[in-house]
Amino acid sequence: MIRFTLHPENPNKRDIKTIVEILKNGGIGIIPTDSVYALACLKSNKDAIEKIVKVSGKSEKKAKLSLLCKDLKEVADHTLPYDNHIFKSMKRYLPGPYTFILNANNTVTKYFKNNKKEIGIRIPDNRIVLDLLEEIGEPLISTSLSTEEGTMREVIDVEEIEDAFKGRVDFVIDGDLKEPSETTVLDCTSGEIELVRQGKGPID
Image (cartoon, rainbow, N blue to C red; front, side, top):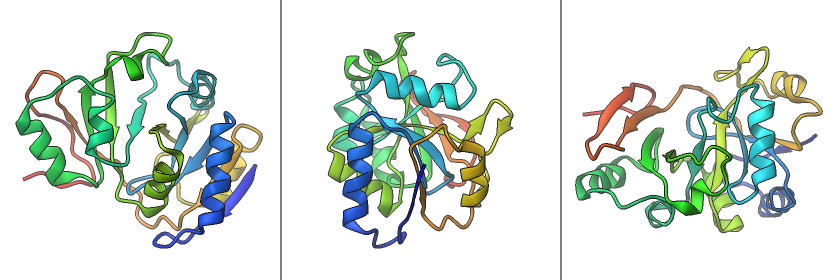
């Protein structure tokens, strides 16, 4: 496991490129977001998706996987059409600590064994993640930290994370995460916006 220590506002471009190469080669890792640390891999690599699901200690059906996108255009490229009021809400709240559950299109579902029809969408307000997404040119699949021993959603001590995932992931990014808190989750699959979980992101 390689540890990368990146400045949260000005991450080293060489390190970003190295991490992207690891991901493109099928690697999986642990990245900071604007909410918690998360397991992540390339969206287009089925084997890597299976790896992060296995590492999380859950079945693919039960694992709550999210698509990390760089902007709303990339979101639209991976979901079925949604109503304008949903678009306005996403434009208002993103980037930020929110997960919008949308109906996925075939560019996402074909990479899942169980033909997943819905996907959590995130545009994290985190410079490290956004730089990774810009460099890699496609979304990442992510899920919150957990192992067979239990959840680690609010763990921010990178050494503790390294100990828990040693030999299971290819890299971890120390992004100086200070206040971990889960995202606010909004389900938009019915055409309406329903609050599933109140988290870090405030809702008017």
